[in-house]
Length: 167
Image 1 (tube, rainbow, N blue to C red):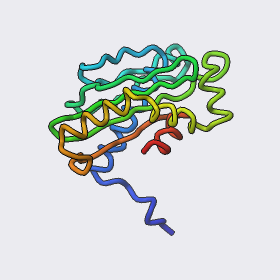
Image 2 (cartoon, one colour):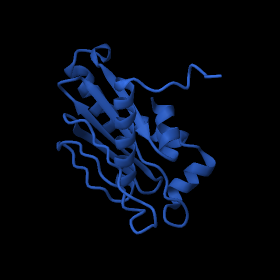
Image 3 (cartoon, rainbow, N blue to C red):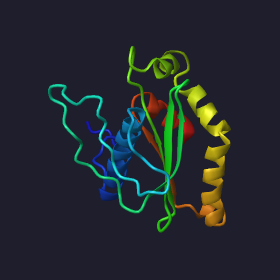
Image 4 (cartoon, rainbow, N blue to C red):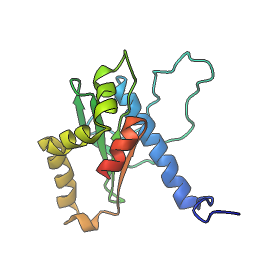
């Protein structure tokens, strides 16, 4: 018996899933020193944490052109690693949330993983004036949040849980 929820995605849904995967990978790379810069086009970054591990390989998925990085939100004490990008022509916002590298490499994130399941990271993000200012500037540019065509939250590992909380 086929579950109607378990159907193949249509092309638009597949494109959305691929974008989410590429954004998640880029956020994870940010957690490992990735090179995003505010004001520059958003490009997929490969996470280097698994380089040299047998069987690992880069993802062959790119981020849809048009997005520009609007903000980077990082706290080494808590392990928060997030970016926001905006595609002005399509009125789409992306928020990428990094995951955890585990003990001993990433103790702050691992602590959040075990004790807070991402809730404190999202509270911290929403409390950041810079995050709110960046998002509100985008909203003002389109004359209200209802005029955005999409706000996509994506992340992997702990970042996936946090993206669900945020979005």
